[in-house]
Amino acid sequence: MLEQVKTRPSPLGDAIRVENDRVTVVREADLTSAKMDAFVREAVFGTGDARDYARWLIWEIGEAVGVRPASINGLYMARGKGAVRGFTVPAINVRGAAYDTARAIFRTAIKLNAGAFLLEIARSEIGYTDQRPSEYVAVMLGAALREGFRGPVFIQGDHFQVNAKKFAVDPNGEVAAVKQLALEAVTAGFYNIDVDTSTLVDLSKPDTLFYIPGVGFPFNPLPLFMGVTMLWQARLTPVSPTMDPVQQKMMKYMPLMFMVFLYNFSAGLTLYWTVQNLLSILQTKLTKSNQPVTPVGPQVSSALTPQSKKKK
Image: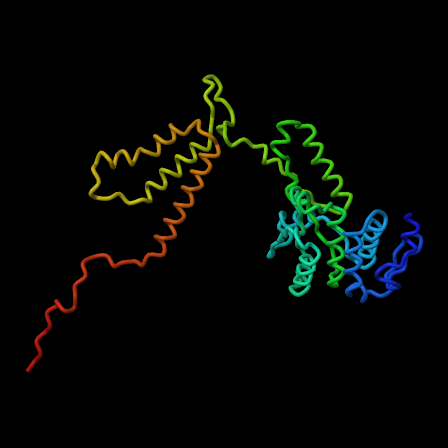
């Protein structure tokens, strides 16, 4: 069957030549024509050997003209060492209308002379859009070829998450499913994989790091940090001069009381409260910094200043 598929004329016609499983591009101009659209359509909606052969041809055409999947790791390492700087690397989740969306991205990249950007899709998105990694890579490479892009194409598996509910029922099976997807993705041309196990973190429990030796008392850093932010926020909040002195003392020591009350509360609650305090502190500081400075000291109206008598 595969041999019959190979003998069929491709949508690109004689613009490419295949000999002994080696692809030669005869006319690069045809790659940016509507012929490529038909080729990508075959790679997505085709069946069996015809679909797989179209995906293989797109990959090989890309190799021939310099459009190939690559890993962003080397650039990240160089950026971390300070060897390069002055730019960002956007990561774009391409899900729906993947071919048209990717074409728009590559068209913009050529216009802006952009070099590094990530095209990514998450495990959940692979599921609900029904785009397996091999199809996704073929579409991204086809879009690059269609727009005349040349250079590395950084494709990433974004948030290959472990499903918490499935993990609770069958941990080994769920981990094996993520590993299998990662293997499928790397084989297809995903050379960056973001494995995400944050879904297994239980924020309903205290964030106990360890128990203090000798007393067995838990050390929970989040409630302590929350108490510090509450004290900081209290210092920034002006006290009303009409407030009762007893109430003033209560307001002063309230953060310490909350620190005790919430010490063994869930990490999610204390984290939420801490972030809320930090945002309130930032808002207060920005508000105060934007207020106009009023002159210090009594201001005397010029209308009340005695005028010197005019000499006759």
